[in-house]
Length: 167
Image 1: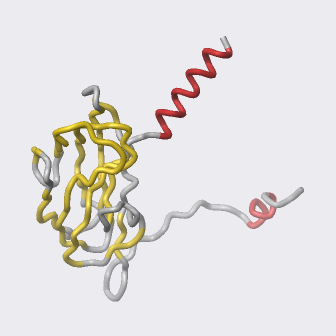
Image 2 (image 1 turned 30 degrees about the horizontal axis):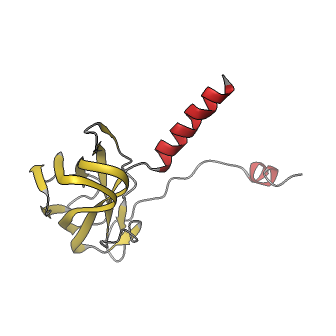
Image 3 (image 1 turned 120 degrees about the vertical axis):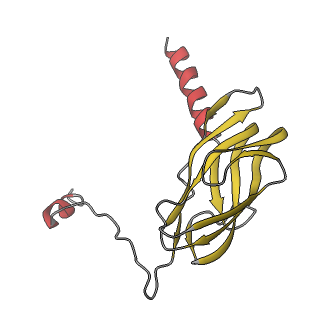
């Protein structure tokens, strides 16, 4: 019984370790996917990372948390359907692995955030499953007259902080 549970655990860990992620990056290599992007006209890249094998992805580019941001265009070399700002499906035309550059997103960015949500991937056996999303959050820099958004904090007391370091 322990062997069966251990085998199931290993399969779960393997599945999580190779989880698909659909994210927005500032470069086609996928190394610049977190942090700030400037306001104004931007060219960003939508990437399907860490794919153990996929033939398609489905996602929505959401800019509701960036008041005034405008999605201008999404270009891809693959077969695509859907409207910009609503659900889009991109077919890769073959089984692809590792990092897949899905396409290029053109937008006018304002202070706020953009994200991919929700996202699904279709594996090489044509089974659709949830992909990690909302990881690709891009915050613009808030300078000058731009509105900056507060960072949420948790209430605490000095005594509870000191208690963390007691032996």
